[in-house]
Length: 83
Length: 311
Image 1: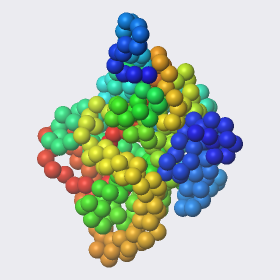
Image 2: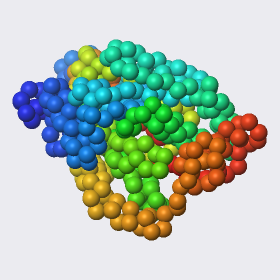
Image 3: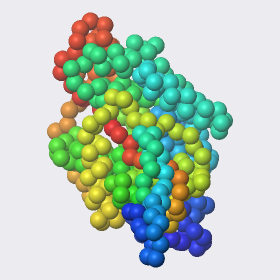
Image 4: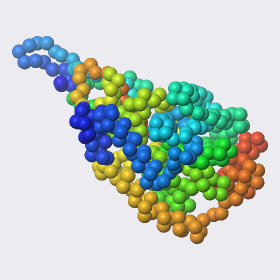
């Protein structure tokens, strides 16, 4: 899936990029961002090391290699405690 | 990614161990790491009465639940710091957790002790974190001794220990390097202290807490911004990603080959502790740090004070 609008050859329709929704904890930020192909790519896009956050979809944990689907809703919880 | 043990889809990837696990196999891995950590350092047995310090965070609650599942005699201790917003939430989490799992809980209220952390912060002209840590350690120790517990357990994990070791090493602090580790014997007014999660990273504990359905307090302390340990953890995260397994190697190497050397040096040149003349708590001064904080809250703003009873 491309991240920028594209025009399909032979057609005049322009498509917006598919997005995903990310809830970031503990800041409780809600982000809408272009869909990335994998969990690892989402984490990289957000500048998060894979071993510093758990990633949850539909109540289940995801490893960094798992595919991210258009319109996915992910919870990303940073687990590094301060102090 | 497939689970290393059963080949189901993995839900936890562990680069440090070059592996991944499904939920059931990860929980087994976690239990075995805790058991190994206890046995390797002879932390305690099933005959011990264990007081577990519970902050409400994922580490301490995970430790409490796992020790309970392993059949150990555990009681929780929560220190209510009286920080508006933060403390009621943390205390609520701890109380609900203990009620849900049928676990004993002791709560010490710093407001009732005249040591509410916001008041301490208002009186100090230095960051409140060290004073807060001092107060918590004081009441952990006092409660363990007063209530005849044989061991005081905390939820410090490998990342906490590495950050502390790195900090102590940067300062070549012989006194702290002489006894840092997952096991600290009872000595001169100090209860025996243990850290059974020393083999497990913060990430591993977070996954355990999630898979076990542990509701925990994850909002950061409103006073902890800029703490140096947070920065050290970030540095070590970068290193670990480049060199998986280095954290545990570094820590175990220190325990086996570093700590004994520093312990010998500290035996020769270390500072002797005696009982605080007011409360009896071990201190290198006449009056311990917590009693001095009480004085400051009563009488005057605090200037510099010592850092002698940080063990």
